[in-house]
Image (tube, rainbow, N blue to C red; front, side):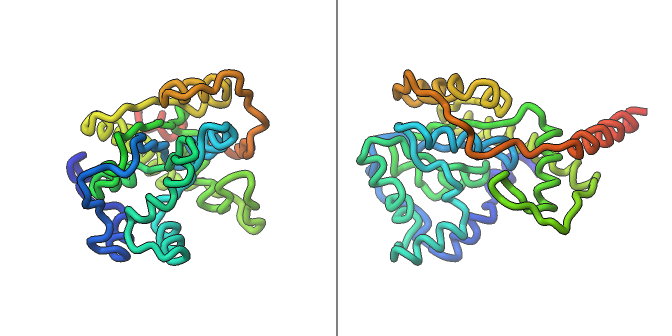
Length: 259
């Protein structure tokens, strides 16, 4: 499938929200609602975005940065508050924190980022700025996701299934490596195509120096967090020796493919 096909095909969240809202999925006004940019934390699963989001919310400047665009969250919140359109939902989330002077952000997968443009949600804001979070260790990221898919422990704050011992699944792991690489490239291309300001940060940089990464993000978004010091992270590293075993096996398979 070409990059054009990928970007033009709605993802699962957009499809479900289209069923929910119909024409109410799109922002139809000409004038923006907010005089600040829409801020998106673009991520792929297990790249470290939850760790970064936690640090951002610990500062006085930032709010949000949850997965508020997942279709089930949108539908549930709209039902609870009597919201009748997707733009109403965005307004409901953003209005109070933005009026209070916070920078309010959304975590977005690449297809959710594309959805925001197709639904003209970007027109509600003065622009779009993207914090692009990736993990340099793509194989480690894929192994982490393969294990979490089996244990259902998506962060250290959740309990793992006690009846599951993670198994090595070579075909799934190959697919996950490919999808992580694809996600990273699509975000880059989408930002270029839409002329979006993009700041690239990595999980490895964040672990090494949270203060430096947050300072870079603050500068990127024209806010001052000088003097801010990171507290303990809200989630812990989950990798065990099992991750290393899976890595060695995967790399051995890769080497064999070169014979």
